[in-house]
Length: 320
Image (cartoon, rainbow, N blue to C red; front, side):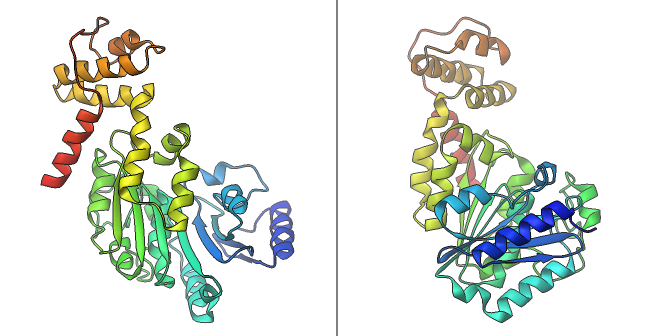
């Protein structure tokens, strides 16, 4: 399937101006913009194909603003988790030609499907680091028979090709991998549990679901988190300190309360709601209480806020 002529022309002109390159494959394309000594390799996610044409690689504006070089792997048809031999050949070529040696710092970056791409193809550059939001480790039914969310996408990919196939294996060849995920999502947690390499850093984001970047952006944190992750300065302690701001956002608190009520922790949920109401008197806590089944009247005794629920979750993580 050829690229639309308008997009192809724009991509070639843009990369030529920067001293980069453009490569077109049957199901993907690779767009390289040469800028600084840090190279960020990004992978499209499932929503990327819905962007208007001509479009640029995922995270293009952010990477350009930082002045980093950029290699964007873009899909042309439907989501296929980058499982095609032409793309494997391309990364073999980059590895063997010394392309990555031109850069002082190499970071692979993606979310969900793109997170899978980042964790697997980063093994073409063993000194690389990876940043992956809610990634899958593989869709191979032989390895993850419990992953049923992407059946059609799995059928589009070549899971018999052994190269860059399983993040549980390729992550052992990386310098570091920062993996962000919600431990309360069973499938996302099971994928994260498969990532046992020494360099993998598990950054848990409970009660936010699969779309962690959207929440981080809403909280005003996404740019800072990704920038520090690329620079290699983000620590787990710093990340958990930053995301404490989530306790003041209604959508997050609603998710925490709903989960607590569903689990039968009604008194704890009421204490958490009282803590939220004391921090954000400008928001309608009574309406929030009704939405999650707690009733409209808030308790007046001192209570604990939503961090108590997070602490319980982290305690379960440690016991597991």
